[in-house]
View (cartoon, rainbow, N blue to C red):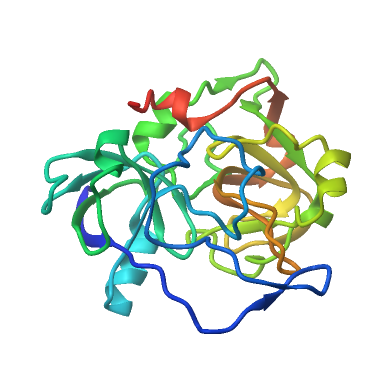
Length: 276
């Protein structure tokens, strides 16, 4: 079933105060909400002076109930159309979930989109199952992205999937305990030496990653022998303790059900052939 959900380009807000980073320093950095016209899915995660950087368009609803429906029902790979304003008719794609649903649009549309511009999200994918792997839980994954991913069934009956990075359980932070269909889970890349130690310097927004010893089937939490597959949604070092790079869950199951393979590039920009 495909549902049409009304949304709008969000507007940044500010509490009038500053946050304290992981070093104990006060910080004021841009990050969530609005239109980020110069950072898109496929770009590097870490070069930005930003906290929880949401690339492209951050879409939401002023009404809390409608916003919750949008957050729950929107899936990566869903189509989004601008239905008013200078960019009317432009078509984008859901590429992440955080405090808002994150949408990539062609650059020409990003250059003219503004907070408040109305959007129509074609939500499709929650409840999806893999007939050959019924024990693997699918979350926030559209049929369009599922078809685009280079998945294979191995001779041993595992699901082979290309990933850009393997993430150990001790790095998982904010988002644990939350619904696996909602927003994302942060990876605690708050220090440059942590990023370097785990080989994440080249991580990109939109990269497919594997999170080890994570059970994201019915919420998000630690469980030995499980794993979760996700897509990097927001970037920056994430200076707040317990926070960092955000990853949206798309699959979870027993580790033995998966065969994640490290490759040089595994990014939804390429899989969905998103326009420039």
